[in-house]
Length: 126
Image (cartoon, rainbow, N blue to C red; front, top):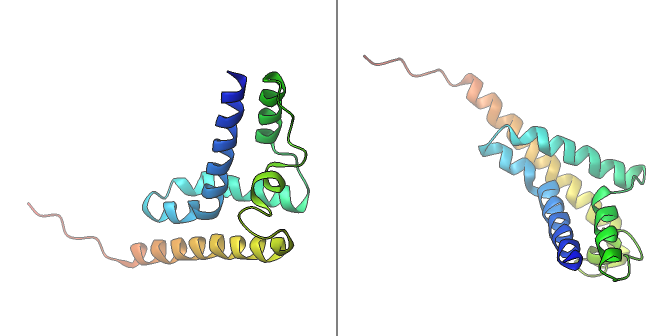
């Protein structure tokens, strides 16, 4: 059962990465998502810049150990993403692309908010 939970944490980890990259676009439709996306972005920056440890990696390793499996030899991204989804020697470019996607989503959200504030409300019909 612990192996199942280790795999579940891995899936949650991938979902977090997708949310980190694309979550700002969800805020275009559901603005309250922005708060969670800001938190995810801050966490992502902390992991990249300050080398914070990710609690999801810790939890996955705990379940792997409980299942008798070997722990991840490196972090989640180094194990499952770098060299698998993109070439390992392109990490700087990938980080710039991710940052650009997030910035575009936030700029687009700001434009949408600004337009919605300038749009006059329709008169109430009786």
